[in-house]
Image (cartoon, helix red, strand yellow):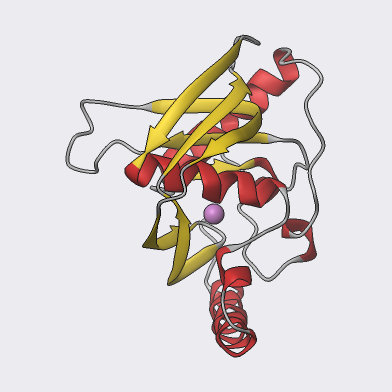
Length: 178
Ligand code: NI
């Protein structure tokens, strides 16, 4: 297992459309495990492969409530694809490990059905609602190079990107723990 570096937006590597995985083999499974470790280490609810610089259609998520660490709800997906979404939508303020410190409000389908390949190379389908549905849509967006600020007005988006550039400068000047 290894912790991976998370790319902070804005960054061209977060804007690339990712390629499907042919098969979940040993190397893909290793990447999935490293992504899970990196997600938990950074206390994220989800992580997509392009956020660690790998342009493959892989996402990992755990939306179990923070106060109930005894019920882990880890989901690992290769080639996730939404094939049904509810007409009903709702709006959440979403965090993102590539957009530190800033919550961004996004309107998304309330419920979705998704098919994917799991970490054992088995095809599966899932119906998700609530926060879990938002998380799937957010992570799949990453695979298509879409970030939460892309849904904002041009003015709001440029404000967010300005703030992120400042945050990136601060992170660059922090003493390294290494
Ligand atoms: Ni994100």
